[in-house]
Amino acid sequence: MSFETILTSEMVADHTGKGYWLDRTITDYLDDWAGRTPDKVAFVDPRRSVTYAGLKDEVDRAALRLLDLGVQPGDVVSFQLPNWIEWVVVHYAATRIGAISNPLIPIYRQREVGFMVGLAESKVIVVPQEFRGFDYPAMVEELRGGWPALEHVLVVDGDGEDSWNSFLHRRTDREATELATMRPDPNDVTLLIFTSGTTGEPKGVMHTHNTVVAANDALPERLGITSDTVFHMASTLAHLTGFLYGARLNVQNGATAVLQDVWDAHRFVELVAEHGISYTSAATPFLHDTLQADNLADHDLSSLTRFCCMGAPIPRAIVREAKEQLPDMVVLGGWGQSENGLVTLGIPGDPEDKIIERDGFPWPGMEIRTVDPEGRTVPAGEEGRLQVRGPFLFVGYAKRLEMTRDLFEDGWFDTGDLARIDEEGYVSLSGRTKDVIIRGGENIPVSYIENVLYESPKLEMVALVAVPDPRLQERACACVILKDGVDDFTFEEMQQFLAGKGVAKQYWPEYLRVLADFPKTPSGKIQKFQLRDQVKV
Image (cartoon, rainbow, N blue to C red):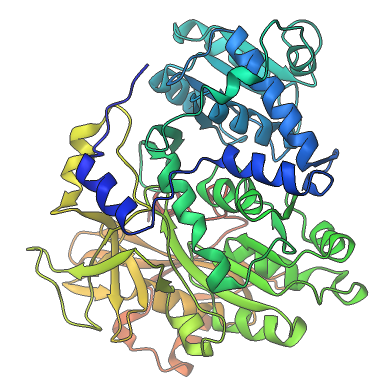
């Protein structure tokens, strides 16, 4: 099938002419490194490892067999796999023949998977036989009647003809030379990835080969990445963070990536020591977990020099603790979305205040601005709607082109976030246009209050959400999770703590809810729309 996009010849000429779009695919990089360093380990997962030569062989075999199944350029291949090497093979094999990869997050169930595969009109879906106690083939069988376009189901670790192993080793009359003739146009859609659902109905974000290659191309210069870097990824590869920095960044640089299919800080510490991991990208809770790991002092983690926290503020207390416990490691904050990759990231050497109070500096080619409700640019330091343009931007929501166009103003994509941009160009996110607490006409600085509460020695996690109020329109509710061994945290304690920190009284939350856990996306972001429903008063 063919998806309509907002890509224009003018955009192609502009980004290509400026050197941001390189007209390369991820399999071009795979071929390069398989030729140059065939015996180097490309990926390690909890089950096995694979060299660059071995990965290329698996990818080519899978690509030929997808052709045997009738998969054509532009067809969608869905896969709901954990962070296993098979995930990478399916994605690269689809890329090799010009098919569109549609990765699905493993925790999605009937409602989400049914909607996403149906909208994508996928021709093939690949699932595990079982992961974390869930029967994926049974779910697919239940949903299959609603997917008229689906022709084939392949099961990793399954038995019989539909097993991945049988598929990969099935005899074919096709020759590998056929694949060279099928290299896709780098401006074709290669990725259909659904938003992680922090604001309602998932949307199918479409990226081309050029947009996702460009999103990774600038990282080596800023972060000191080389072919000797050892990457790590525990966030699902089906989230854009995992997709870019877990499944592709190493291959674009000829490096090794270590994958975790289930996050466990204790095991991460072991993996760092075992493989010399030097770089990981994850949400802030992953950093907190690492610092609390009971085996941290027992292992050499000196190789870990970069911890990039994506998508959430980094509390000052955590940054300082990281500096004390892991002095060789630089913690950097970054911001991006499924629609635009990574837009900003801190710069190694930034002072502490820049790391804590800002969400990074734009990548080369990516521009940011803040505007008022009428679309006028606001001065440096003032809050406004955050807009983005540049070579990493997506090319549309699948089958939602009018929705896509509605979010653009003269080429600028409206992110739905509120932010401030300082005089040096660093951005500081302050909330979402749909996640703002307005109490009696006064805007409550959500991120600021959360950051202050994070400094309490009693609190593990904090999220500020709005609750309706008939007189003031909204009031603020502080949702907190207590640290291990802490029995309680009272409303009066919270008030005393905020007073001691010098927080203006009009900003104090008027409700407190102590919870056992928060609803989160697979990448670790708190789903505030669900949290609001839980704490209605």
